[in-house]
Image (cartoon, rainbow, N blue to C red):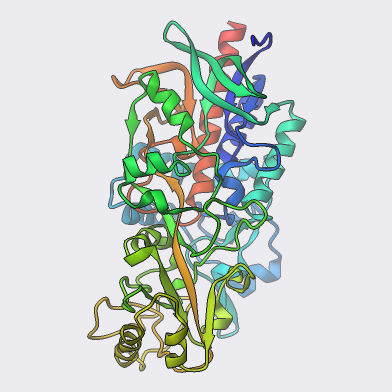
Length: 500
């Protein structure tokens, strides 16, 4: 069916990056349509499943006050830490083994604060992340992990707020509309062919922004690019990210870029649904593992649980769980750690085993070698540096001696009942491989590195930013930074063509 209307910009997708692209394009004077594969109830991409923490460059609390209300009393009574541009660069370089693209990382870090301020001006709401990123030490609250703010309402709240802004600004949103190919006039992209309401429809535009996610929900593509075993990983987020945008772009000669065998994958509830549940978006989070010992089916530890704050290891430790026999592990705590666990551990959708003795717990653990587990705990307890004070708000150096793998921080002797174990598996969040762009505009380039006229990208589809690992909170900020860049670029180009 032909479509009589033409827009200046079409945005494919409706997560944070897509919404930021749409809003930025409108601010350039462009008319915008959004094509969303999901229904209105399931819309929002992976952004709607995000916990909501945001990592951006800031020097002090005065920078934070640009983004949310912080009282004078809170300013004085709290150590807000910092995440200077140098610290942000250091963290990004560390987790990506210095492979992150220099131009992209420069834009991400240096524009992160202003971009978050712009998002707030568009309607998003931030607040201090007291529950999960701070602790009271010696009567004063301290933040840790360099991510002191979170989205009010989490990722789903962000999507809701930005959707309201987009509708108010006149963006046309088409739900249940999956893009299948790019329309071209000679070599210029001029729209999207999509499947909607049981028929095919051509959506014409002067520019297209692809911001419809990676291939994490596609088991065939996961196996092809990530390797054997990834087809059985749980999908932490939306079921709609099937790699369609990447296929559309590659089909017309777009240049692939970045870590195509890389992914963000976390420790996740073992018996969670195969894909993200929109009614229980965060119940399966298991991010308190630095305070645990993690054991596999043989009853053995397999990672240094406390090498860093979870912010810097959670996105790669899911892959370590996937490597274990039968793709599962247990996080084991005693009563001393229970008050420090994050909220999802108390969910009714949690597989937990509780016992008054370690021997009793060992008998309860499903599919675990009992003697192997007890041997591991005895050796671990004997190796803890008990003379070093425990402090979960800093890398306390309370580790182990003489065992492999070592635990670097937050080690404590498991001796206080009740003992609790949580069953986890691997949950994949998003994939790192994407498209190469002109970083300053978001315009996609072809395999000869020539810009493809009319085509832009942002969000998970942007390649070259993340390799091997990921610092927590960077995804939503990256979506904002590069979503705005792509929307500005596409909007400006489309309006120039329209009015020229």
